[in-house]
Length: 179
Ligand code: NI
Image 1: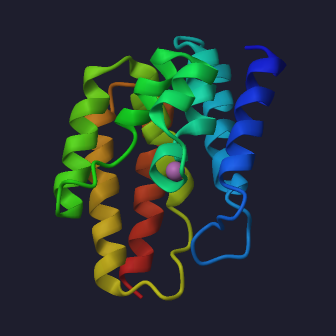
Image 2: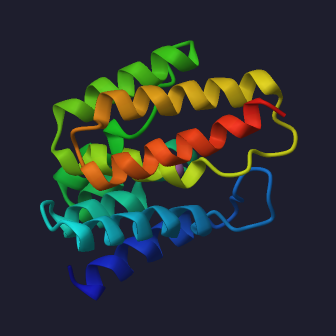
Image 3: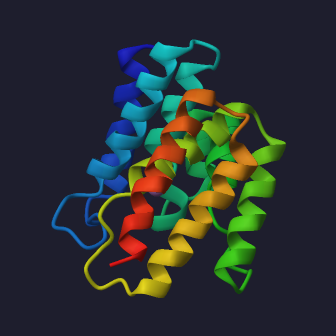
């Protein structure tokens, strides 16, 4: 991977997410984005069996379509069609109604693409399985846990190391459902 590829993608994400915070915190959203990228970098150090350039760009850009005014065509022009389509698969389809349908549909689309797309989804959920925001109720925490279990089930063959990390995070997160 080159520093230039990383810099270009994080600069784009930094501008797009500039007004967004990590839910339930005062942290800028780039904290989430860079944690996902860190998971990818460390996973690649354990086993270099995936395309790091592609995975890191997906990690840095993965929430731009879902959370900002970024257009698919903009990603395509700046980062190419493959990255744009990967980010699209990582984006919920808002025409679907339930959260469950949205997750199933995204996982289905992720599984049709290269393994790097699934690897980023694993890294995303690892990063998100932290102390839940204070305003979340028990039902929401349980749903989030069940979603994580589904992600692990559907994507476990994408990367052994990250799936093991996700499984560990799932076990830890269960504590929050018992409070
Ligand atoms: Ni994310």
